[in-house]
Length: 114
Image 1 (cartoon, one colour):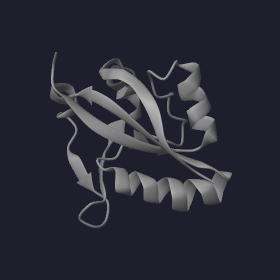
Image 2: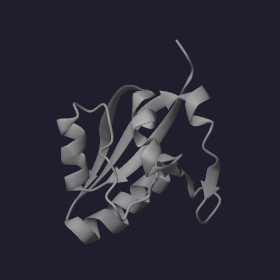
Image 3: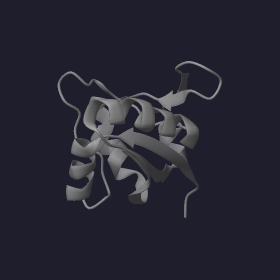
């Protein structure tokens, strides 16, 4: 088995419904105004976004965790979006199907905030 990398994704209820419809194995296509998919590299950053942004905008925020093939995901440079631990990957929307194909196992909800 190939090595995997753990990623997190803060998400709201609409996106989570689409992940559930995909049987917890894929992220939904981006909307036209969303050219980039942003998984994050640490749980604390994902918690802050879900708790402080998703709850404010949709009443509930979720933190999801998933594994992805390390060799594949290494093509995406780590972006520092703020402080030292504010790290994310920028996956172009047109590459999301290929990204999803490299997810290992299922996407799981690890935190819920209301």
